[in-house]
Figure 1 (cartoon, helix red, strand yellow):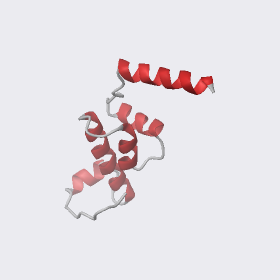
Figure 2: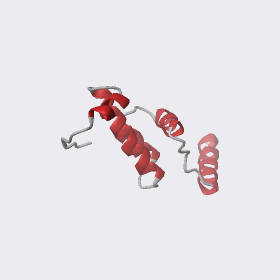
Figure 3: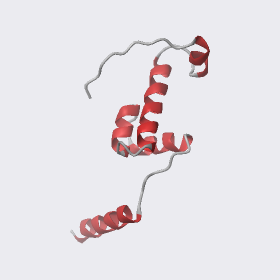
Figure 4: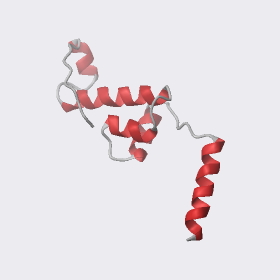
Length: 91
C-alpha cells in the first residue's frame, strides 16, 4: 500500500490516553480509521485489516468487536459461502 506522510499536532492529554509517543499512537490512529470506514461500509474486512496493519481478518474482527462493530454478514453472504463450500467439498 502506497503511503503518504502527514504531520499534525495532538494535544498532549490525547497522547497520554493513546499510550504515549511512538508506534502505539500510529497503530491506534490506523485502527480507528479502519474501524470507522468499515462501520460506514466503505471498505471490506480485508481492507480494514490492511489499513489497521494487522495480519489477518480474524485479528481485525477482534478489533471491531472491541469497538462494538460487528461483521456486516448478510443472509446472502451466508448462502454464497455455503454454495462455495459445497463446490469446494465436491472436488
